[in-house]
Each structure stands twice: as structure tokens, then as C-alpha cells.
Image: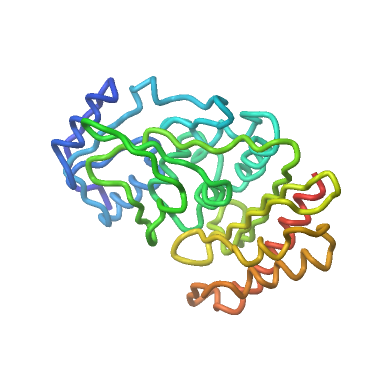
Length: 286
């Protein structure tokens, strides 16, 4: 199928893009990488009357460390993260996850912020954003707001982003050397959507005890979710194999998994147990 007719706009500045969003409202859609929007338009699942192509806005193309955070502009492509964009655990985690994102042609066009705006439950970046406590900078004509990742995801493919708003930047904390991050994902073939994934971050104190823990799961519910009980179970003690195994079991029991004809709920729950344990073990191996 072919896309239905639409008007095309190519603003050269943020102000121009925001004015177009304000003018077109629900009928306008931002085009950055287009790796999610264009296929849905081709199948006529999305029918925007206007596309607002932001690729000519150079000020949105950046990824830089600043004031203890990694700031990622709306035009930063997936492929940028295949190499370390920052030293330490945050940069290493992003590079590890980038290997799992679709295929090379998609990684060269798709964007980090576009993934967050699309809010696919199986998105690696969405899961990492929730795990690390990302913050989204959202612009609209006449103002801006900051949205923490915990408030960003609302349901499948749905965020708090308004029709007249642009996700201009996502920022992640630059974790210190006392943090260890892990990532594990299961899919049927390389590049396929994740059936289950886990992102973990552990902070160890001088005695080797877990002083901080974050565990996020992706591909298993309508949005990425935090396994808070599992993370809390790790605190205050050394991360032994038994404790990691127990935390993984808690993560698997702490939510109601989605299911479909190919993936029964019990199978997805078991995958969560395996992926969480694998991510935790991987974080301690780095």
C-alpha cells in the first residue's frame, strides 16, 4: 500500500517547527528518522494530514555530557550509540543495547528520541530510559516542560507528549564508577522485536554490598516497567548468586505479562526470570 496524501513541511528552526505543530495540532506529525511512522503510514494505520520534517534543524543533532547528564537531542541516531558516547557505565550500557536495535539501515536513520516518542513496549531505549530515570525536555510554542521517565509512558505506543509538543531532548544520568549496568534481551532472530528484556543497574559500596539497585523490564507489558520489589531485595547485602537468583524470581512474579499466539504468558514470565538474572550477572562481570 501507499501512504495517503499529506502536506510536507521542512522547518529550519525549532521555533518554526513548534509554530507548525501549534497550527496543525492532531493532524501534524513530526518526522525525524521515520522508521516507525512511515511504515504505519504505508499500511494506513496512521493518516497525518501534515508531516513536519525536523531533519534540517541542526541544533537538535547532538549527544553531549553536561552537568552530570548525557543530553541526547531529537536527531541523535541509533547508530551513534554503537560507540561509546560517554565514559563510564551509562555509555557502556547504551553501546551494549545498541547492538540489539533492528538492523544497520534502521539504526542509521532512526533516532533515540523518536523511539521514546513512539513508546514501543519492546524498545531498548524506552527500557533504559525508565531504568536509569531519564528526563525528557518537551517544547511547545510559548513554553517547555520536563517529564521524568516514570511519568512519560502511559500505555502501548502512548506517552504524555501532546499533539502540539516536540520531544527535543532526553537526558540520562552519567552513573559513577561505583555503578554496574547489565542488559539482556531475548528475541527469535537478531533484529526482531524483543520478547523480553531486562536492564539492571547496581551500585556497590566499599564493602561490596548493594547500596542502590534499579531493574527495568521491556517487551513484557504495555509499557516498560520497574521491578521495584526485585531491586529492593538486593539492597544491603553482597550480590551473591543466590540473591541474584531470588531477585530474578521476584521480577518474574511482580507483573502480569502480555501474551499472544506465539508467546504464552507463562513462557514470557520465565523469560523475564532468565533475562533478569542474566543482566544482573552481566553487570557484575563488567
